[in-house]
Length: 323
Image (cartoon, rainbow, N blue to C red; front, top):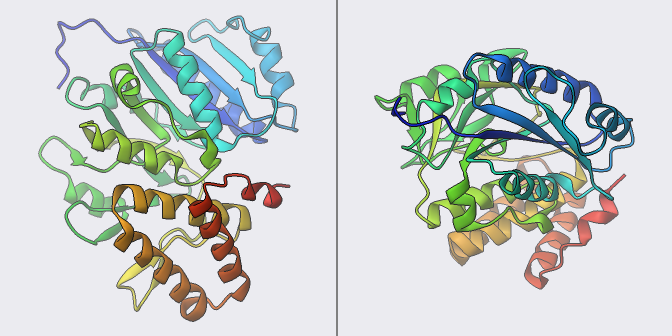
């Protein structure tokens, strides 16, 4: 736990946004509340705008005068609009580098559609010094007892979907070790960033966060989920769709863009961090899901394109699915 004799860290929040100005405004308001708390270590909020078309860039420019802190009494907000949409991977790559450049000790990373509880950061910081990469549980804002992103518990194949199961799986410190859901309110230490580098911007979306966690673990980073810390998040649909009679799940998405990036990036992550047997098992699982569980011939073709691109090291194919 945190040593009270140690000075508070300089915490910088990084938010990556794309075409969700109302959700972004809600989140910035919440972060301002967090920064207004007496003794809060949250010193500023950095917003990376992925070339939004909904007025986000103009709103940020009005808040920040492009690069200067805004006039919030508690937490300055700075905005930076990218020249093109680089996806979550590119956004967090840019934002994490920006935060480190500005002297952050800890970087609090989040998408624009999450909403941390007012006490989320305070709860996470109770574990400062014991962990390097750690975050909250992410729950459905319309059903807070349900996880938005199911958690596979360490040491087995069990996947939990409810907060009650998460709480029951926690250790005596209120942690589920070796599990975290990046980048949804996670804290990462400056030291870890300097050790492992930045997220892989070429991944665009889906799998960049998982790769960063795997890279952190490979480098000896201490990873955990803090069960008492919570971020609210809109439902994302059918993540963790059951297959094979409920013995396993598959991350099905109705979006061709998301599926293409998932298929490409997951194959690369599995090959790099688990080896070819796991990568080929993922291929077999995908073929089964879209042949038997949810027959969709087009998805088989899309998957094959993604896998070929992965093996070639081609990170441009997703662009055809951008709108």
